[in-house]
Image (cartoon, rainbow, N blue to C red):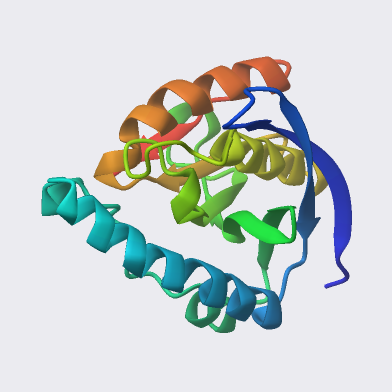
Length: 192
């Protein structure tokens, strides 16, 4: 799949000002290898620092063990990988699939885009690091999933399963984003 690039706006954690970043659609294994190289070293040190600050183990990110390269290699023909890059680093990654259908009765068995994997860089995880470098990474990815759904004829329908520590984000932000981006309003099922 050819890569496409478009601008997205994040919020700089230090200045709280808008920051232009790049959303890349069609990211491949090589890009996911680079993400692993960037994130895993930082994550290892950040976990050590968090534990030293007294952060309980159960408050560490649930996705700290994920390997993006392995997930990219396991992608099927109907999958697309996205990254958001700012200042030469991946700030978030997402893999979506198009082989799923809706479970909600209002759109039962209609095609949708399924968010198979979504993670923000460890330096952007509020509560895990003292100050996030960038915010709005996750919501920018959800926006990308909705737009991808519209572009491929799924009418903005998306679905996902969220990790327990992400339920607050997905429950509030995803539904508000869907209401703002789609007409008429589409429904997002947050499944566990």
